[in-house]
Image (tube, rainbow over all chains, first blue to last red; front, side):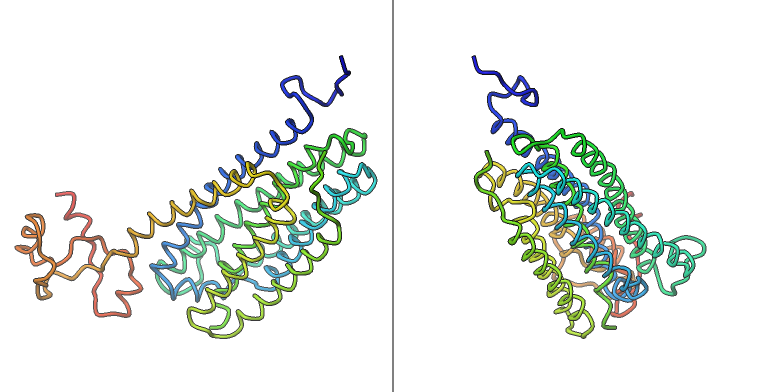
Length: 213
Length: 147
C-alpha cells in the first residue's frame, strides 16, 4: 500500500480529485455571490430605466479620480494574486508569500482610498436622508442608495478578502503549501478575482455614466 | 498535477490589457455619445471580465465541469434580469382620470370597470421622470388594485 500524503483528505481518491472538488466548491459559492450582487445590479438597472436623467446627473457627484485609482489598484491586486498562485504551483514559497502580502497591501490601499471617498461623500451631503444635498426628485436619492449599498457590500467583500489572504500568507510562511498541494491559495485567489470583477462593473455604472454631462 | 497552466508572461500581458481598457473606458466617458456611452462602458467592462475569467481565474485552462459551474451563475442571472425587465420595460404610464379614454386598450371586464371610472390603463406608474418630461401626469393607482 502506498503512503498517501497528510494533506490528502481521506474522502478523496487522488490529489487531482481533491483539487477539482475545491475548484467546483468555490465556483458554486461564486455562483451564489453572482446572485447576491445580481439582485443589486437588477435593482440598479430597473431604477436607472425609471430615472435615466437623475441617475446620469447623480453619477457626476461621485469622485472619478478615487474611482479610477481604485479600479487600477484592484486590477493590479488581481495580477499579484494570479502571480501568487503561479508561484504556489511551482513550490516557490518565498514568491508566494511576497505576492500574497502585496495583494493584501493593495486591498488595504483600496479600502483606504474608499474611506477618503466616503468621508468626502459625507461632507458633500451625498448620504440619502435628511441631510441629502442634491436637488431633484427621488431618482437622485435612489442612485445614492445603490451607490452606498453596492460599494458598501463590495467593501465588506474586500475586508473578508484581506482576512483570507492574510491567513494564506501566514500558512504559506509556515510551509503549509507545496507544488503538489496549494488548493487554499487557488480558492482564495478565485474569490479575490471575483471581487475584482464586481468592481469592474461598479466602476462604469456608478462613476462613468454621467461623466460627459 | 496541473499540466495546463498559465505562464507569468501571459498574466502580465492580461494585466497590461486590463489597464489599457481602463484608460479607454475612462477616456470614452468624457464624450457625449448618447446611449453609446453606456454601450461602450459595458462592452469594455465585459471584455475586462472575460480577461480576468479566462487568464486570472483560468477558466480557459480548466475542465469542462468547472466551465459549466462558472457559466451557471451568469446564466441564472441572465434569466433573473430577462424576467425582471420583461415586466418593467412593458409597463406603461397611467393616464389621469380626466383624459379621454383609449378605445384600443379595452378588453375584459376589469378594464370595463376602469372604463366607468375613466381610467385607460391599469398599471402602477413607476417612472416620475417620464411624468416630468412627457405629457403624462403622476397618478398612483395602487389603491385601485386593493379595492
